[in-house]
Amino acid sequence: MQTVFAQPQDQERPKNPPPIKERLERVSGELVKNKIELTTAEKEKVTAAFKTFFEGMDKLHSEGKRPDRNAVDALMKSRDESIKKAVSAAVFQKYLAVSKTLLPKPPGEGRE
Image (cartoon, rainbow, N blue to C red; front, side):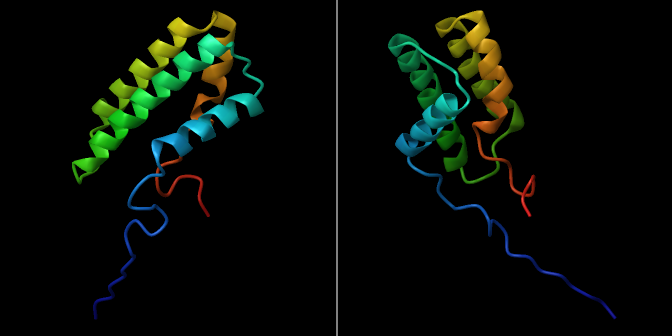
């Protein structure tokens, strides 16, 4: 006797991510919530870094398969380097401490 289990794929994850504008608003809100204070110029540069990151991620996801981890890591590194150049060392350290909370968790991690 053979038992087969089936689970719907991507049940918890929407097929399309929210619009970039919504994701940028979420990131901005999280930065404020975590008391990362930015000047207007810094906020513009950080927003631009995240916008470029989200556009790159959308492009990777549009290829219809799971994005290559190296490509994702390269996008994250580029984003973080842009932010590092835009803010003070102290602000960047605060950003690094909360950066893991800024992006959604992969499917199956931390969900109940």
